[in-house]
Amino acid sequence: MAGDGRWHVFLPPRFAGTPAVAAAGFLALLAGASAVRSLQAAFALALLVLLVAIHGQSRRAGLVGLWTLWLLAPALRRVLALTAGTPTADPLALLPFVATVAIALLELRRSTMSGEARTTLVIGGLGFLVGAPMGLLADPVAFTYGLMAYLAGLSALVFGWGDGEEGKQLTLVRTLVVLLPPLAIYGILQYFFPLTSWDSTWVETADLASIGAPQEGHIRIFSTLNSPGTFGLVLAIGILLALAVRRRPLTAAATTLLMLVALALTFVRSAWLSLVVGVIVYLTAARGRRAGRTVAVIATCLVALVVVGGSNPTTKAFTQRVTSLGELGKDRSAQDRLKFSSALLPTAVGKPLGAGVGQAGLSVRLDESSANDSLQSTDNGYLALLYQMGLVGFLMVVYAMARSAVAATRSLRTDSGLDRPTKAAILATLIALLVSEAAGDVLYGISGAIFWYLAGAAFANEDPEPDARPEDGDGSEAIGTVRSALRA
Image (cartoon, rainbow, N blue to C red; front, side):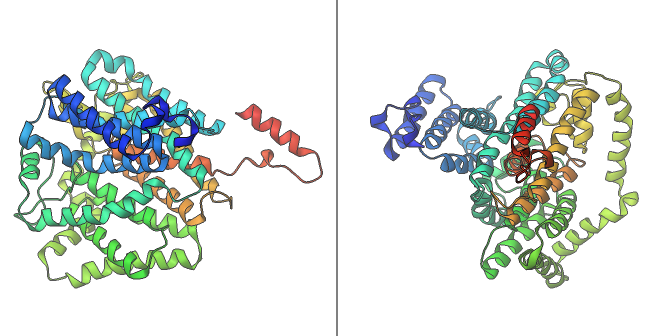
């Protein structure tokens, strides 16, 4: 994008190029360190300026950098905390959200999103804003963080459209295919070896729920992300999106097995359920021999994982954890969560404007004295949305989510744009995330950015309405154009 006249917004033309990108990051680091005297703030400012500069030079490189930031920023926070301490408000925690919004605003300037995509974006945003007044009154800090998290994720729809419109391999897929295998290795090492000093400190200070593994003396792995639940869901997403990538059979089998092992060591049952549902959707949508062969790789790796390790205590713990999905009546933790959700539902329905954005989920932790501390983990994302935004806001957000899945389904009817396996993988991942929402709020954090990004790619490849398609020789081309304009 260096030749489109936009680079001068960030740097003078004579400074455009790779050296300028490095210089921008270095200057931002110095400026941040001198201005705020905080190592975390300096790094956050430097990375933000660097990412925007890279995006100005190469759009796709900037998006790859953004997804890399989402995956690695939590680990950077932990490392810096060892030397500089953990600040009360860590700027690096906000950096991925701010960077996502910044990139989305840059993309919006040149975006040609359809009327349906823009409508979905607006309806979803208004749904979150319904819970704004009550959230602001209840807790301004939690409200600000929660609203930023939701809207930042939603803004990813903008550059998801751009990637889908280009018709090339999605930047998210490229990033996950390259980074998830080494992140899986890192996670596996967390399970079998003592934690690094930065990870150990994080476990002690972050008060992670259910960090202990079923096998005594081990933890549920989280790699470079913040929790086993987040890492498990990202692994499931990576496995589903990788189904559409052409790779050598041995390479595909090795990387898939690696990620399945890591997913098993998170012991996140909902991620496995979402993965199974997603694989079924992909197999149905992709069709053809390639789809069957790709899914067979996953099935083979999973069978090998269970059979070969049948005598291993860790494998037994994993199989018992997964098979307990069919015995929720005997699962005490599951029953406790169901009782809590049942008790909370009438309260959520009885608040037309909701309890307010930020009054459920991780935002609650920002106020240690909050009376709603139990709402940190409702273990039901739909209920968390309903509680925060009320029935009206909840229905608007759910409509935007469902409309995105419809767009992904309709994209399968077109031959242009992305190839069919990629479209099938997008649909499979969106459905998997809709399933995961019943076990946790996937619209919050990296999974939220991924959901809306894939939604944007789906809208960019959506099949037009039947009455908007031109018919040969009957003069309906003009009629279809007029109808499309009116609909937009």
